[in-house]
Amino acid sequence: MIENLFIILAINTFVISILWLSQLKTRRADLIDVYWGPSFFISILAVAIKDNSFQSMAVLISLALLGVWGLRLGIYLLLRNSKKEEDIRYVKIRNNIGDIGILLQPYLIQIILIAVVLFPFQVLMLSNPTGGISLISKIGVIVAILGIVIESFADYQLSNFKADKANIGKLMDKGLWYYSRHPNYFGDSLFWWGSFIFCFGFSHNIISIVSPVLMTFFLLRVSGVTMLERQIAKKKSGYQEYIKTTSSFILLPKFKK
Image (tube, rainbow, N blue to C red):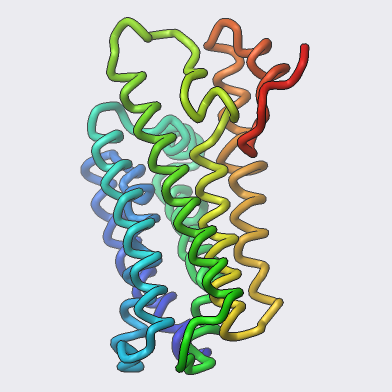
C-alpha cells in the first residue's frame, strides 16, 4: 500500500512540477485542470504495470472506468480552456502571492487529492482481486457509468449553449440544467460514489468512503457549486428565480414557487 501510494505521489509530483514550470512561461496555470482527469488513470495504470495485475478483471474495469471518465474530462477541458483566457482563480493567486503561491496552493493540493481520492482503487489492488464480479460491484459500475453519462451530457449541452452567440448573457436552464443547476458536478459525484461501491465489493474496506465524501464536499463547497454560484448570481439575470425553482445539485423536478 505504501509503495503504491509513493508511486502515485511521485508520478503526480513530477508531472505537476513540469506543468508549474511551463506556466511560468505560458501563464496558463489552468493546464493543471486539464491534467486532473487523466491523472487518475495514469496513476492506477502505473500501479497496475508495477504489480503486473492486468489479468485481474477488477483492475481492468478500474482502468476502463478511470480512463473513460478521466480522458473525456481532460479533452473537454482542453478544448474549452483553449478558447478563453487563463482561469481567473489562478490569475488572482498569482497576483496576490506570486507563482510560488500557485505551486503551494492548487498544485500541491491537487497532488495530495489525487492520492486520497484514489484510495478505494489502491485498496482494491492491494486485496489482489480475483474471480467474478459481485452484485455490489456490478451496482457500483452502473452508478459510475451513469455518472459519466450525466456529466458528459451536461457538459455537451452547456458547450452547445455557449457556442451560440445569441445566448451570450443568458441563463442555461435547458436539458439536464432544467433539473439541476449543476448537473455536471452531480454526475462527477455519482462517478466517485459508484467507483467506491465497485471497489468496496472486492475490498470490503469502508474507510475508503473518504474518497466520494471528499469529492462531493469539494464539488459542493470548495471548487464547485458554492464558488460558481457567487459568480453566476451577479452576472445572469433570472438566476435568483432559477435558484428558487431548481435543485442545486441532484437531478430533481422543479420546485413549486
